[in-house]
Length: 199
Image (cartoon, rainbow, N blue to C red):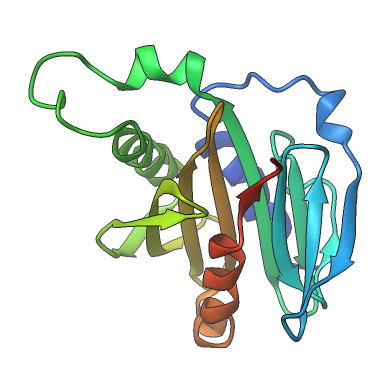
């Protein structure tokens, strides 16, 4: 039995601040286009965004019911999901106008909240410092972490990238077994950095 079933269930419990996505809209078909980059295909999700994924990953269902994109390769034990949360709903909750967090960006606050939520479902053993970056001109933060999930013998490696779009904040999460980190971390970073909104 594949190991992803248990930790996918826990991801559903631990990663969503709010659930504002209409279930009918989540069933958007993703379209694939070959890109110039060897070994990757560009996937378009509705009229919302593009993401470049390894050719060997396939469209999936059941990884996370809030995700607008779900791709996997169960033989290689690698998974990628994308979740978008409306900024209009998040800003009043995450961006204080005064106090010690008033100078923090919305994306930094969102990253902190996601880390707290993830720690409720995963026993985090290692976590990198959050790295601020720009992805397609948008503010973003990237975090690497490894953690134990109940029911799975081996630790899981996650690459979380939070991106502040025009109308939504997106979380691009790729994950695999910790023993496979070095085989996939470069591809995971490529996936995250390829995110772009449909103009």
